Image (cartoon, rainbow, N blue to C red):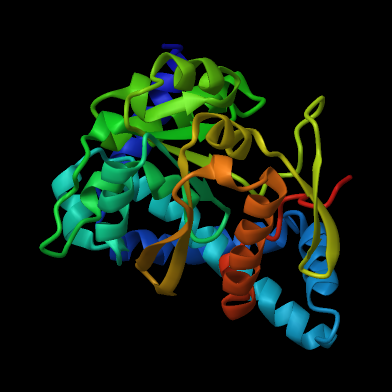
Length: 299
């Protein structure tokens, strides 16, 4: 590992040792910096204004302020997550799966499951799934059976740092986080092996990717990628929508909604439409919980 990456990871490790409440104290400073540098301010206001054309400027501005507060919290929560202490993460109850029995039943009844994720809540916490069971239900799967698909950031330096952060709560880095460029081969190599695959499905299509139209989403014509859904359909996997809802500061509820048991019985368009309908309903219910700073509608 590069010396600079080691230094940054060491600094983050030290910062992560602070209690979660202290991290939230520093969140205020992060929010001030984000607003002072006007971090993607135009993108945030444009996205919010188009998604909620009925709202007045003061309401849009208030939503933007709430979004920046949440974004700052995501930043410090991710540092807290990086400490690599499963007992502390579990004890913090930062994330709680509300219907773990559905995860278990889909894992046991389907040849594989594609979980369609979004940028609601703190998506960086997804890899800590084994720490989020609090009811009498225990996971029916092992850690290496739950793989999160991610796209490398453009900066090699920050890519390595983020890899260390994301993998801090797992013992099997190779299987728990899979880069998007190798996910198809990874899935084909495990054909016939029950597995969860988490795909972020609300990204704008990557360059050179085939864009799939999904119709209206938040009052705008929207295109998406369908890699995860396509593979699920070809392999007869189950598909579910997952939402990470911020119900209070320091507490997310992770809920899974089944879309189908066999994706080959539906079209890709039908599955994507169901996903976007569920996502839109969650965003409308809790607007500030979404990542408004990404260029979702750039086509």
